[in-house]
Length: 196
Image (cartoon, rainbow, N blue to C red):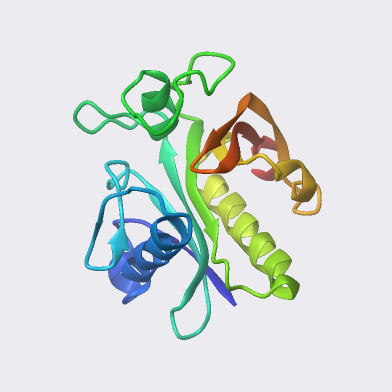
């Protein structure tokens, strides 16, 4: 099992991995969860998949993506859009409640959004923890590489059950809310202690 942080600067070095990540996202969010999201050529994407983002993929040797996530700077801007959590708070997204955060969404060079996280549902239970730990390890490495001290994530509300085992310092950033039949919550991720 491997993990790779993808960017527009390095995708040419990884063959089909970038496309496979978007195919796995489609499998996870559109086919399994039934979410109404943009898709083409068997891939799920949205307006936040821009050149300023980074994508973490956990994959096996033949390029099959097992898990992934997207990281976007909170200073990102593309047309009217910034980053997903902030745009939801601004009322630009119908699928995410605007009152998802306890405070105003940050605009800070050292804070990045972490969204579109998934682990494929067909991963055996005995292997899921290893996949999750690999995903978080690579997320931490990507945070270090990009001088990210804090993340703002949208996670299933069961994050408290696995965060300590994954050695991830998480705290609530907003209320629990039902989205697509799943309880989600905005969460702060502290990376500062991991950056040295």
